Every structure is written in C-alpha cells, then in structure tokens.
Length: 159
Ligand SMILES: [Cu+2]
Image (tube, rainbow, N blue to C red; front, side, top):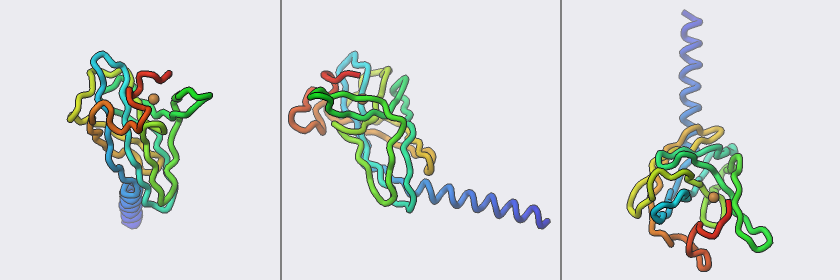
C-alpha cells in the first residue's frame, strides 16, 4: 500500500514537471514564404520565447510538407551569404530568440508541393527540456519579411 502511493506520487510529480517545462516555451508568429513552382526548398521562421528559469534548446523541427526539415544558420562569409545546418539553437532563460530571414531559420527540404500564400504548414518543434511543441507556419507572400536587398528570397543562396 505504501509502495503504491509512493509510485503514484512520483508519477503525478513527473506529470506536473513535464507540463511546467512545456509551458515555459511559447512560439510567436510562425511563418513561411510562398515558393515558386518546382522549388525544392522553403524556409520557416518563428519567435521562440522561454519564460522559464532554465535555458532550453531547440533540437529539431518536423513538418509534413517536406521530406527533411533542418535548422540552419545564415551568415556572411567574405560578402557571400551562406547557410549551414546547426545541431540546435539555445533559448536562454527568460529570453526570446527570433528565427528570421538572414539568421537562424528552419529549412524545409525535398518539398512535396509548392508553398502557397494563405496555407498553413503543420509541424512541431522539439526542445531539450520542453519536448515537442506543435507549431503552424502561415505561408506569406514571396517577398515577405525580406528587408531591402534580400528580395528574391533563397534563390541566390548556396547550401
Ligand atoms: Cu537554409
């Protein structure tokens, strides 16, 4: 009897702590850009906020529109915009990190169909502590969110 209640208590506690971790992460304005017909890749952007007292890390992203979804970082290398896959993105405690054009972004690869304005891409973000967080990226117009000289989107960038 005693053993049983201890187990039940442990189960209840683990449920509570798991819920607390997930609640520490909120996602804001998940969006993507429409892609031209035949495009193989698209990008996703989102602001991730960590309201908890401990740092967390975005480890992976999954979506149903792409054969493969990666996290990329974009940087300037001798005046050339380049991107590379990263193993994860740190989300410091009490801070928010914006995945946006020109920085960290989500890369939808092996697109199954073009991304159209107004559509929603269903997916999930997986965090080290918070676990899986569902997300819905809203597809915006092709030039959306590109500041100044970045119009034309991903076409000039090398993988
Ligand atoms: Cu990329």
